[in-house]
Image 1 (cartoon, rainbow, N blue to C red):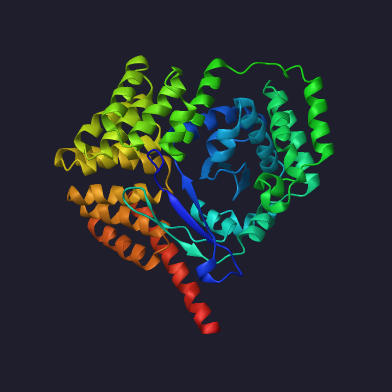
Image 2 (cartoon, rainbow, N blue to C red):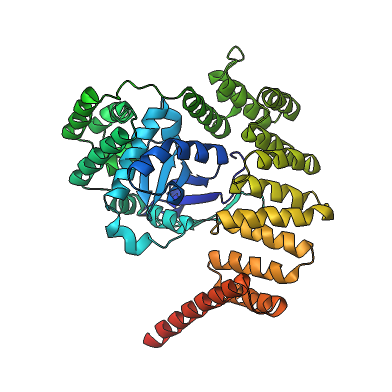
Length: 456
């Protein structure tokens, strides 16, 4: 498990051409974490702006995979493997990779895939990229799982691989974006040097970044020459960025690796913020909840305005059956970072599961705020339907359920709940208009299916 993860998707990849009982299976998980996503977004904002892109329109997505990779797909979606983040040595290396991937977006290199993926949900994009079906999500944020047949390696290369000329163009644009934002280009060169030894490995042992982003001597030479000439090559990163980078590395490591490995890497003698953070997470996962709470309380005392420490305390309590106690720290996290959809979802869920009827309206308000920020979050719509239902608001519960079912691809059920919501809520207003959209989408798909049946 990872820190509070919503829309966690487990994808089981079955290798093609191998008998079922002998198939190797690899589990990849799409994960959500407010701190990691927000940190990467802070790092990337100057790059996006230099590229003429709206930072709010870029989605940062994380895949729990130990290999080094990052890629763009389905429009303005940048995917990061957790292995790349953990392996990176400073903010500049992540920023350099982000600048390169932004070059692909700004350069229009995704056009060839736009018909297939431009309107797809994140889960659908992952399914197309990896040749797997996204698993259904339970109310605890755990994956029910999904299985699909193989060919994923070839499919992934086909969808993600760029030509050498496009790679060179993305490098050139990355250097320009870094120059315009007055940031050091050294990080991209350092990342290329990390990948340098990969070229001599056989394909099966290479990190996927090398297989989908052909690394050539010309590319490395170009970046090296640019670094040598750049007036910003030795510009230091802001100290707060350095700490933010160390924290997300420690957080990812502590949630992904076994606790024993965390204690080995972040020893008791290391009293840095990130080391104490990692040990608190490791103790929580052991589980040694009392030690973990003592450690996170010490961090909160030192940094009382840090929303992510409060969030972690809420999660520790929630997942150790102390749900009523979890509401207060989640509420504090939201007060400190009110525009975080994930923190709002965490608070809303804790308020629902506290089984306190007096908190249901607040839960609905928090979840409604979350879906305004992230309207394609299925889990949030599902929980919003539960909050409305338990508060006896049947009309709004049916509307939220219709949104959830539409995002889940269950169109007949979505149409049923949309009609029910319309009957209960009446005509007029923004929600009524949205209900009409849901019904129209459902009817269009139904009509298309009927045409297909007649054709055959």
